[in-house]
Image (cartoon, rainbow, N blue to C red; front, side, top):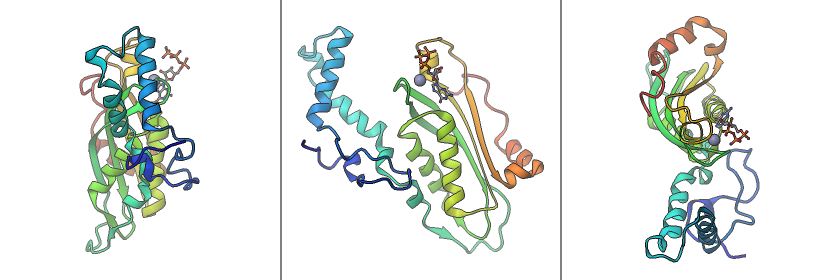
Length: 222
Ligand SMILES: Nc1nc2c(ncn2[C@@H]2O[C@H](COP(=O)(O)OP(=O)(O)OP(=O)(O)O)[C@@H](O)[C@H]2O)c(=O)[nH]1
Ligand SMILES: [Zn+2]
């Protein structure tokens, strides 16, 4: 079997990396096979993949998939490797709120669009704040359910930084519920994972929840 070259998933190493990087390298279809699969779906939808307007579509869809699923090629643990210790004793929570993301429902492969709020209580070192948003991005750019994505983000920060606590809240709209199936536009799903002080200390949790504000009114954001 041939393998496409220089695409994000080609960087994936064979063999599981503690479940963080999903292994698809072995048996990965070629780019041509992926494009043929798109032609099959176009025919399944009732259209003609040889008509002019659709000729370039398989290539575009495969390129889009490289963007949508770029997260399989990254190890989020590595993103948090660089930390800073010169904080002059800063020991309050660090909160990054309203991190917008687009993910994809693993049941229907349609978008999950929302925001993540991420906080941690540093023990002695802090991480560059963009890296928290990058961790969200890596997990979002995979097939997901919201609960798993919420846990993965919190667990990764906890494992690498070993802070006094981690909190992650995600609010998102699932297009599998809004544009198909039960058709309930305006519904958003809210999930949270609290670790360490955020779990054990109600006042820490309250402070975090106050900082991120109330979940947005259903559907107003996405
Ligand atoms: N818990 C959870 N459920 C999700 C998430 N994304 C999608 N779902 C749900 O996954 C379920 C899949 O149910 P199935 O009955 O197997 O699929 P389906 O026949 O397409 O279901 P409907 O969406 O109700 O039409 C649906 O209830 C979806 O709403 C998620 O992030 N978390
Ligand atoms: Zn779905």
